Length: 494
Image 1: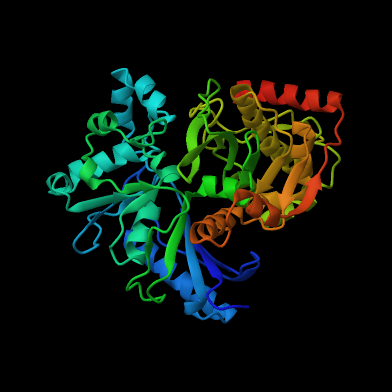
Image 2: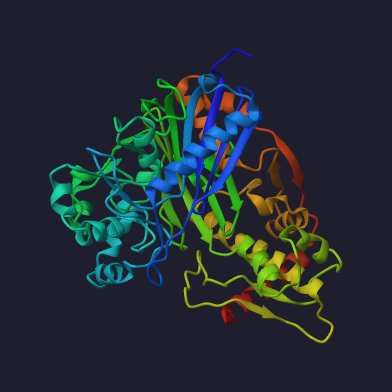
């Protein structure tokens, strides 16, 4: 193999960093994972040290390349995918963070969002951004930093500070502080970016009290943003050339390039995204409108729905109830019975996300009797994950007008054959699992390869995407209707 033909994909997540080294045929040659500390200074507050994140990236790159026997000089491109909305602020002159980053989970700005809603601002914000007014997104987090870090607002207005989601921070560090950018998919998660006009919006910046001087330049999702310089773990001159938020990266990694094509990532929660093409689709069913990616000056949009608990429900079975010792054993337990025995589980352990948006909802296990066993409960939990995902899919069908011809899946829980068969039965469409379940990292690698010229078109990329298994629907219409009716009754009571 020719030298300098490896792509480095950095997947920077909420609890850890995963680095994958892929060859020019997308075969995984090396990988490494490292967790980093979480900070919880007050109830509802979640913070990350930006330096801890950077050090986790450095160590993963070093280990991933070393274990694979790959010379760092053979890396030809770097792609980045990242936890979205997490908000960092650092000095231009020294690259030193002025405060720990405020994580997407952080709720400290809930009152600020509620005040803006009370003023009647949400409709106008949603019209421009496709998002709801919620502390989940970056704008109120950034405003909090500017108002609560001594001198930060004045220095930001003077152009001395840089705001960034984690992609911006990593590009900054890879390039030795030479490049301050983000891509359109990450920008669209800030509440400051007009997804229709394709740029930072003066009115939104004024509403949230954010000076434009602190914002990064918004670039496409695949182009050369800059070259490595003085970053230590890699030689100078390697192009950083692909960026996307984690869920958009997974959509790209699944080769969902046509309107209507969808993917669901089953992790701690479940994230369903549908490609809606070059026109943003307004949701009337509790979903978000977001940028999927921007390539060659053309923006592709997506509808997004998220369920807060998916794999976390299996963790609850393990850690909370002690029904299983390892998460992967849930399938074996659930297969001990042919059905749920009439039990229905609503995975509202952290409230209900889209399409219901009921934060006050709580988890519910309904329909038990003296014959209910641990196996019935395990099977009901898996079915509950599939049923709540079906709600998201139905909302997307209604909003977009697109039927979902097949359903691509990824993430850790997508390795559960029983859950995937349940999903196919409830949706009544084939569920397709790719060979590479780490499609978030794969999407970053594909974007980097596109940005560096290794691939020249989406058609070429689609040709290298491979399915591992397809789960075809087997349930009768009557069984499907009965499961959905039980689900509706249970959700109403949760």
